[in-house]
Image (cartoon, rainbow, N blue to C red; front, side, top):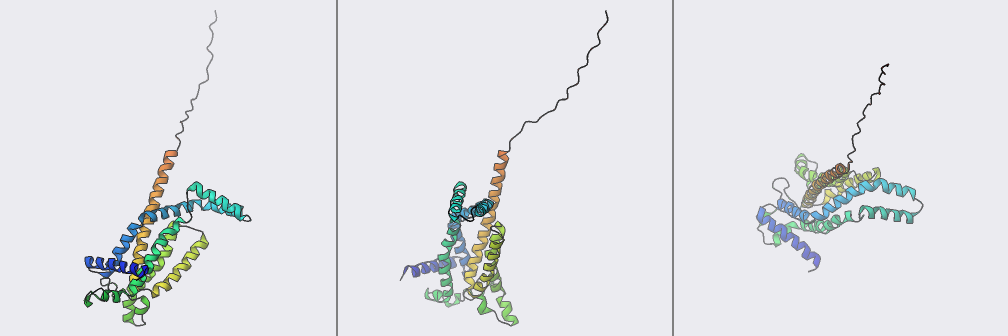
Length: 263
C-alpha cells in the first residue's frame, strides 16, 4: 500500500471516529474541516496580512511597472526593493492553498468511495447512505446525479444546488471583501467562479460540504484580520499625531502719550 492510500485511509479513519462521536457523517466532515482550519490558522493569518499589505503596495507597484515598462530587469529589482521594505513575500499567499490541496484531493476520493469504505470498515448497513441530517440525503451523490426535470427531483436537488452555489461564491467573496486586484483580476475571479459552478455540479456533496465550511471559516478569519489591521493602523496614526502648541494672538493696545502739565 502506497503513501497516498495510507493518507486516504487516515482521513477516513478520522472521519469514522468523528462519526462515532457525533452520529452524523456530514457533521463529521464539518468537524474535520474545523480541525484542519485550526491547524493552518497561523499560516492563514499570515496570508490575510500579506493580502492587506499587497493592497497597500498596489499603487507603488503600478507606478514602478509603468515607469520601467521597457526594462524588465530594472522593474524586477525595484519591485524586490519595495517587497523587502514592506517585508512582503509574494509567494506567502499560495501556501495555505497548497496545504489544502492534498486534503481536498484525498477527501474527494474518499467521499466518492464513501459507501464502500463504510462497508469495508465493518459498519452496519443501517448507517448508509451517509447523510447530513435531513439536509443532504446522500453525501456521495452530486447535484448532477440528483437533479432531474421533474418537480420531485428538483425539490430533492435544491440542497445540492445550494451547496454548489456556495462553492462557486467561495472564489468570488474573498476577492470582494479584500477588494484585491484591478478590474481585470476581479473579472478573472468571476470567470473562475462560473467554472466552479460546473465543477461543483459533478463532485460529491460531501466534498462541497467540506469546501463550503472551509470557505466560510476563511471568510470569517479574513474579516477578523482586516478589522484587527484597521484598528492597529488607527492606533498608530493616533500615536503619530503631533500635538502642536496653540498660538494665542494677543492684541496689544496702542500706548497713548500722556499730556504734559505746563509749569
